[in-house]
Image 1 (cartoon, protein in one colour):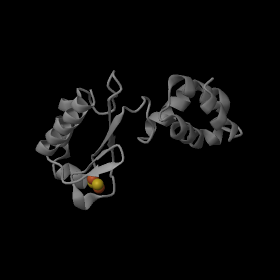
Image 2 (cartoon, rainbow, N blue to C red):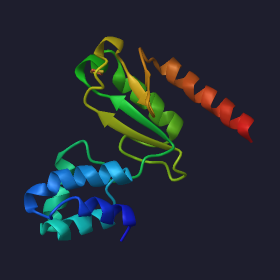
Image 3 (cartoon, helix red, strand yellow):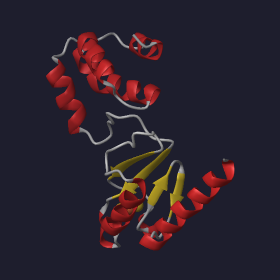
Length: 156
Ligand code: FES
Protein backbone atom coordinates (compact mmCIF):
# COMPACT_ATOMS: atom_id res chain seq x y z
CA UNK A 1 0.00 0.00 0.00
CA UNK A 2 1.15 3.54 -0.76
CA UNK A 3 2.94 4.99 2.28
CA UNK A 4 0.97 8.25 2.05
CA UNK A 5 -2.27 6.31 2.18
CA UNK A 6 -1.03 4.37 5.21
CA UNK A 7 -0.10 7.61 6.96
CA UNK A 8 -3.54 9.13 6.37
CA UNK A 9 -5.38 6.06 7.65
CA UNK A 10 -3.30 6.11 10.83
CA UNK A 11 -5.01 9.40 11.73
CA UNK A 12 -8.38 7.63 12.02
CA UNK A 13 -9.83 4.73 13.95
CA UNK A 14 -11.65 3.12 11.03
CA UNK A 15 -15.15 3.79 12.32
CA UNK A 16 -17.94 3.73 9.69
CA UNK A 17 -18.89 7.36 10.49
CA UNK A 18 -15.37 8.47 9.57
CA UNK A 19 -15.95 7.61 5.91
CA UNK A 20 -16.30 11.17 4.58
CA UNK A 21 -13.41 12.65 6.60
CA UNK A 22 -11.22 9.72 5.51
CA UNK A 23 -12.14 10.30 1.85
CA UNK A 24 -11.35 14.02 2.25
CA UNK A 25 -7.99 13.42 3.90
CA UNK A 26 -6.94 10.80 1.36
CA UNK A 27 -7.84 13.15 -1.48
CA UNK A 28 -6.02 16.06 0.19
CA UNK A 29 -2.92 13.96 0.56
CA UNK A 30 -2.95 12.12 -2.76
CA UNK A 31 -4.79 14.55 -5.02
CA UNK A 32 -7.53 12.11 -5.97
CA UNK A 33 -9.19 8.86 -4.96
CA UNK A 34 -7.66 5.93 -6.84
CA UNK A 35 -9.31 2.50 -7.09
CA UNK A 36 -6.71 1.19 -4.66
CA UNK A 37 -7.50 3.97 -2.18
CA UNK A 38 -11.23 3.32 -2.44
CA UNK A 39 -10.78 -0.40 -1.78
CA UNK A 40 -8.48 0.28 1.14
CA UNK A 41 -10.88 2.86 2.61
CA UNK A 42 -13.75 0.38 2.30
CA UNK A 43 -11.81 -2.27 4.24
CA UNK A 44 -10.59 0.30 6.77
CA UNK A 45 -14.07 1.67 7.56
CA UNK A 46 -15.68 -1.78 7.22
CA UNK A 47 -18.08 -0.45 4.58
CA UNK A 48 -19.01 -2.22 1.33
CA UNK A 49 -17.04 -0.85 -1.63
CA UNK A 50 -20.34 0.03 -3.33
CA UNK A 51 -21.22 2.26 -0.39
CA UNK A 52 -17.85 4.01 -0.46
CA UNK A 53 -18.29 4.70 -4.19
CA UNK A 54 -21.89 5.76 -3.60
CA UNK A 55 -20.89 8.31 -0.97
CA UNK A 56 -17.85 9.60 -2.89
CA UNK A 57 -19.71 10.04 -6.19
CA UNK A 58 -22.55 11.86 -4.42
CA UNK A 59 -20.27 14.74 -3.42
CA UNK A 60 -18.83 16.90 -6.20
CA UNK A 61 -15.69 17.57 -4.13
CA UNK A 62 -14.23 14.11 -4.79
CA UNK A 63 -12.04 13.34 -7.78
CA UNK A 64 -11.29 9.89 -9.19
CA UNK A 65 -8.55 10.87 -11.58
CA UNK A 66 -5.26 12.64 -10.90
CA UNK A 67 -4.96 16.31 -11.76
CA UNK A 68 -3.01 17.36 -14.82
CA UNK A 69 -0.05 19.79 -14.67
CA UNK A 70 -2.55 22.48 -15.58
CA UNK A 71 -5.73 21.99 -13.59
CA UNK A 72 -8.62 24.05 -14.87
CA UNK A 73 -11.60 24.72 -12.65
CA UNK A 74 -14.63 25.97 -14.54
CA UNK A 75 -17.20 27.81 -12.50
CA UNK A 76 -20.70 26.68 -13.38
CA UNK A 77 -22.49 28.74 -10.74
CA UNK A 78 -25.48 30.84 -11.75
CA UNK A 79 -23.64 34.14 -12.27
CA UNK A 80 -20.98 32.49 -14.44
CA UNK A 81 -23.53 30.38 -16.31
CA UNK A 82 -25.62 33.43 -17.18
CA UNK A 83 -22.52 35.30 -18.36
CA UNK A 84 -21.41 32.59 -20.76
CA UNK A 85 -19.65 29.78 -18.86
CA UNK A 86 -20.91 27.11 -21.32
CA UNK A 87 -19.08 28.83 -24.21
CA UNK A 88 -15.94 29.14 -22.06
CA UNK A 89 -16.15 25.42 -21.31
CA UNK A 90 -16.49 24.57 -25.03
CA UNK A 91 -13.43 26.65 -25.83
CA UNK A 92 -11.36 25.06 -23.05
CA UNK A 93 -12.42 21.58 -24.10
CA UNK A 94 -11.46 22.42 -27.69
CA UNK A 95 -7.94 23.52 -26.68
CA UNK A 96 -7.26 20.70 -24.21
CA UNK A 97 -8.95 17.90 -26.15
CA UNK A 98 -10.65 16.65 -23.00
CA UNK A 99 -14.07 17.06 -21.42
CA UNK A 100 -15.05 18.21 -17.95
CA UNK A 101 -14.05 15.64 -15.33
CA UNK A 102 -11.21 14.24 -17.46
CA UNK A 103 -7.42 14.30 -17.33
CA UNK A 104 -5.47 14.19 -20.58
CA UNK A 105 -3.42 11.04 -21.26
CA UNK A 106 -0.18 13.03 -21.21
CA UNK A 107 -1.21 14.47 -17.80
CA UNK A 108 -0.91 18.03 -19.13
CA UNK A 109 -4.51 19.06 -18.45
CA UNK A 110 -7.46 18.24 -16.24
CA UNK A 111 -10.82 19.97 -16.10
CA UNK A 112 -13.20 20.14 -13.20
CA UNK A 113 -16.54 21.93 -12.88
CA UNK A 114 -17.19 23.69 -9.60
CA UNK A 115 -20.37 25.21 -8.20
CA UNK A 116 -19.07 28.70 -7.37
CA UNK A 117 -15.53 29.98 -6.98
CA UNK A 118 -16.76 32.89 -4.85
CA UNK A 119 -15.86 35.65 -7.29
CA UNK A 120 -19.27 36.13 -8.89
CA UNK A 121 -18.70 39.82 -9.63
CA UNK A 122 -15.89 38.75 -11.97
CA UNK A 123 -18.05 36.22 -13.86
CA UNK A 124 -17.45 34.25 -15.88
CA UNK A 125 -14.51 32.95 -13.89
CA UNK A 126 -12.04 30.15 -14.47
CA UNK A 127 -9.23 29.03 -12.15
CA UNK A 128 -6.06 27.77 -13.76
CA UNK A 129 -4.06 26.04 -11.06
CA UNK A 130 -4.29 28.68 -8.29
CA UNK A 131 -4.79 31.71 -10.53
CA UNK A 132 -8.22 33.26 -11.02
CA UNK A 133 -8.97 34.35 -14.59
CA UNK A 134 -11.79 36.89 -14.51
CA UNK A 135 -14.34 38.08 -17.07
CA UNK A 136 -13.47 35.27 -19.42
CA UNK A 137 -14.41 35.19 -23.07
CA UNK A 138 -13.70 32.49 -25.67
CA UNK A 139 -11.06 34.82 -27.17
CA UNK A 140 -9.34 35.21 -23.79
CA UNK A 141 -9.27 31.42 -23.44
CA UNK A 142 -7.73 31.09 -26.90
CA UNK A 143 -5.17 33.75 -25.91
CA UNK A 144 -4.20 31.88 -22.74
CA UNK A 145 -3.59 28.66 -24.67
CA UNK A 146 -1.65 30.52 -27.36
CA UNK A 147 0.55 32.06 -24.65
CA UNK A 148 1.03 28.64 -23.04
CA UNK A 149 2.09 27.08 -26.35
CA UNK A 150 4.49 29.96 -26.93
CA UNK A 151 6.09 29.50 -23.48
CA UNK A 152 6.32 25.72 -23.90
CA UNK A 153 7.92 26.21 -27.29
CA UNK A 154 10.59 28.41 -25.71
CA UNK A 155 11.41 25.78 -23.08
CA UNK A 156 12.37 23.23 -25.74
S1 FES B 1 -21.00 31.84 -9.89
FE1 FES B 1 -19.01 31.80 -10.70
S2 FES B 1 -17.84 32.73 -9.14
FE2 FES B 1 -19.80 32.61 -8.31
